[in-house]
Image (cartoon, rainbow, N blue to C red; front, side, top):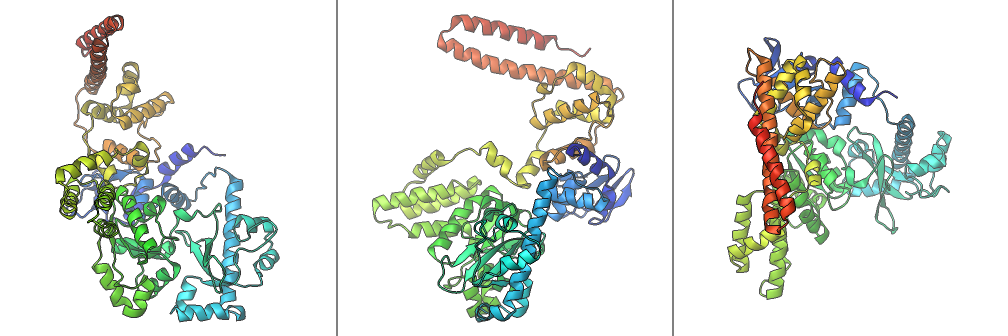
Length: 585
């Protein structure tokens, strides 16, 4: 099996980044590079640069940057594996598979689902599907719409297994696809209207079924399979993704019929959440296409609570989220039936910030004249306010809560600070490519560490000097530390292009592009300049150690441990002497 890192290196080397970017940006040559208007922000003067030599792009305006893979990820809203697969397909290169057997198994399951979907469709439009057909027409779902969404019917007699058996599909595969409940062969869907669930590429990954009699549950979804996890997908995303990107926002509804009715009435940017409460993965999926979401959930208590629970997820993804009022109707489908498309358009245009919606719904659940209930309501609203990142917005809602509750603003702020928790490293890693990433890229880097790496990338022969004098741990910036370590590994392998480093995270690739594309002032004596950078990096490292040791000594002084105190003082003096002795040789 081919080494994946070697495959990525080959892919980046063979792709023509100028040709790739030219499919989206009008480029013109400028010296050895190409420039054009940045596709990631509005500008009148070109600041977007593509370097065929470095195989990188970089915008000096918004600081977006990276290689061919990250460009395709950003411009087409793809994940890393999807972008790699698309480029490999373009070049005719086979992507190494972690397990060929696992890939074949997935391909078989896609085949099973496609065959099952075709069977259900045929049944809906045949004699056995009359009852399901009548239900759809009663709900206003037109024939054309039924075919666009590939709606189907699962017969009461359970003929699917026999149909697939004749196609060479065994019961074990049916079980793995989630179409039978046990290896004995009892079919999951019987006498149900079928809603196929597709992935981004329009491949059938699962099914939802609505009972056409008194069977429970009323709605039944496929269980977890190698192709499907309920909390990771959105219904109709394959149809909505283009419109969501073009319009800049997504409308999220709860049910299958809600989504279908909206699309039928021209609202192509609508998806359904396959349940009431959105998950982090679903919100992350939406964030790839838009930064604004309008929730149009059912007006019952479950829909209200789902809206409130999803608010924090959108905040963590740096997305604007609003809530549409359904004008007293129970769901978007009912609103459309009674008020047509104008009614839903009005609900969307008059949507309110989700925080305002959640605040008011929580406030209405408590009797604020009863002290205990007022206290519980205040604490719940403070939990909501604690999810807001902006101090200005926090202050606005604290003032509002003070007026509603009678508590003083200072008291509420004090209680709020007790509730706030710092963002964990895990939460930070899970945030999508967006505002935080760009802020980190634009942030000022340690000057000596930045200059050191730029020099080494420009003058790779100087790495021999850096190898003798520097250790990766001397770097204070975590990403620059990794860059130096990986460049050092390439140097030891005899590679000259030290910057040709494989990274999968957008943050690392963007920062690498910045180092490679932002010009470094020319130097008459690069070796001397590198020595000065090394001196500064080592001195800063020792200064950090000195500060840490001084803090330890202060603590020991209070503890009364005189022996360890004297030992640490000696270590401190050695550090001070080292700092004084550092000079450029």
